Amino acid sequence: MEADEHRIRLTLHYDGGDFAGWQVQPGARTVQGELEAALLRLTGRADRVTGAGRTDAGVHSTGQVVGVVVPERWDPAELRRALNAVLPRDVWVAAAQTAADDFHARYHAVARGYVYRIGTADISRSPFVRRWCWPLAQSVSLDRLNDAAARFQGEHSFRAFAKAGQPHLGEQSMVHVARWRATSGTTATFQVVANRFLHHMVRYMVGTMVEAAIERRPADDIDALLRNEPGLVMSRPAPAAGLYLARVYYDMADIATLDTEPDKDWSVGDAADEILS
Image (tube, rainbow, N blue to C red; front, side, top):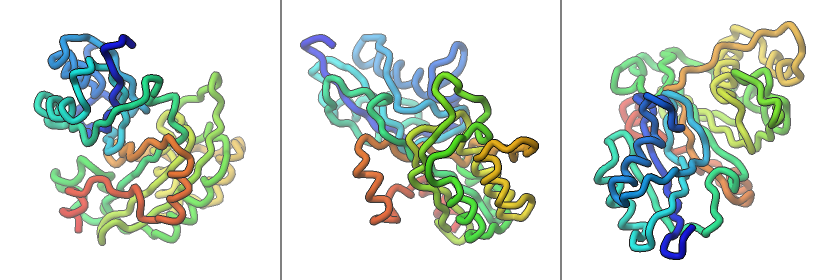
């Protein structure tokens, strides 16, 4: 980084429905690509930005953290206003702040939090709602969902809950929080916080928990899958539309507050929740 530059930390919201994911891909519309194009327009520089996580096609975010390096004349507030003026309507910079010179959005993160929303009433099939949830349109036992979720807490191998293994990184993950709640009379929302996530891990977890909750498979299958017992087939992954990257954690103390402040970090898809309620 040059002497006349500084690093800014951005927090992004985006509707992932029309994106091929976060990461730049040839010939595909991506969130990273749109952000870099907007920065090029403002600063005249074609710089690569660093995101805290690589959300897949169709996955949303209310807490993606991005590190950008810009000329010093751009203070955080001015950069946020300018970006929001030129970014497409499905991306919004929620916050901008000065970051340390060595800040790395991905490598400095200690955990990430995802939220998954299920529509449990027929209204979830509305085109104004289904884009931001899994339109399951049937009731699901919250007690059974939470019984299933509790089995994921702690450190486990998540090889059975991933689209592909990551042998070079390992398949262990420490899940700090895994819990469900009713966020409106017609919505069930899952919150999970872990030190790392394998490819499609949350979606496979949700698909399995829902099958257990509606009694299509025994909840004990989750324990067996976490032990990588042979002969068990994973459930189908839940649709991407219900998944949100909700928060990136850079301090373990913030994770500890999730037990003392149980309502913290649940707020996603508020507009859809109002329609569902």
